[in-house]
Structures are given as C-alpha cells and as structure tokens.
Amino acid sequence: MSPAPPSGRASEDVADADVEDSEKDDWAWRRRIKANRTTAKIYRVGVFVLGLLIVALGLVLIPFPGPGWLIVIAGLAIWATEFERAQRVLEFVKKNLRQWEEWVKRQNLIVKALVGVVGIAFIAAVLWLTFHFSGIPGFFPDGVTNWMQTTARV
Image 1 (cartoon, rainbow, N blue to C red):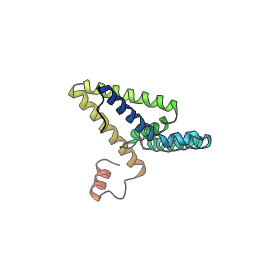
Image 2 (image 1 turned 180 degrees about the vertical axis):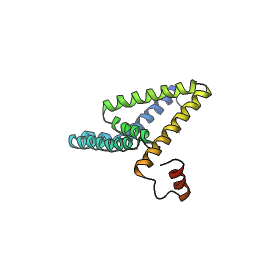
Image 3 (image 1 turned 180 degrees about the horizontal axis):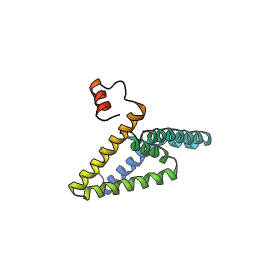
Image 4 (image 1 turned 90 degrees about the vertical axis):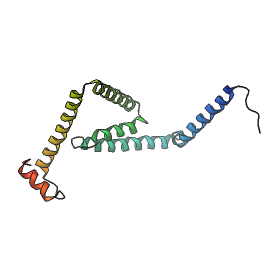
C-alpha cells in the first residue's frame, strides 16, 4: 500500500494525466491513419464523401416535415472533424441557433405561440404541396384519403 500524497495537488496531477491518457487512447486510431500519407488522404476523402451524402440527404429532406436541417447539421459535423471551413460554418450555425433559441425564450407566450403556429402552418403547407403534386400515399386509411380529397382538396 502506497502512502497518500502529502497534498491534494499530486493526486490531481495523476487524475489529469489519466484523463489525458484516456483522451489520447480515444483518438489513437485516428493518429495511426494520419501517420501514413496515403491512408490520411483516403480517410479525408472518405469523410468528405460521407459528409456529402448526409448533407445531400438532409437538403432533400428539408421541405418535408422532419429532421432535414438536423441531418444537414450532422453532415456538417462530420465534415468539421477534418475540414476547418466546415468547423467555422458549424460554429456559425450553432451560434445563430443559440441566439434564435434565446430570443424565443425571452418572448411572451403570444409570440411563442405565434412561432409555433407559423411552424405548423409551414409544415401543413409543405405536406399539402407534396401530396398535391405527388399524390396521396396508398398506405393512408380510406377515411383520411377521402378527407384529404374532399376537404383539403389534395
């Protein structure tokens, strides 16, 4: 059994070293890839392609109700692991989303409700346009389909 350190500082240094070692181990695979010029280039291309596919999917999904923008931001986050410009864009997006969130939080209940109503109206309009131009999906129940054709005039 080893004696306890005379001050708390030595134990903090050991804890800090343990955290640093665990952080290094978390990224050891990445350092090995980047150590070789060829694998580093292949890795960067892979990150670019994966991010591109995810961003493109998100952009396609933006007009539909659901997580279109969230998917775009996820693709940006993937790019940000390798590309500095993507890191800057991601920080810009995060900063502006935080500002929007804080602005909405500061508003009174009427403004918050109005923001919600505008969001729901936008989603309803997108759904209406989607069904109007592409047709009502066949898996919808007959009652919903009839309502959409008669009342909503889809």
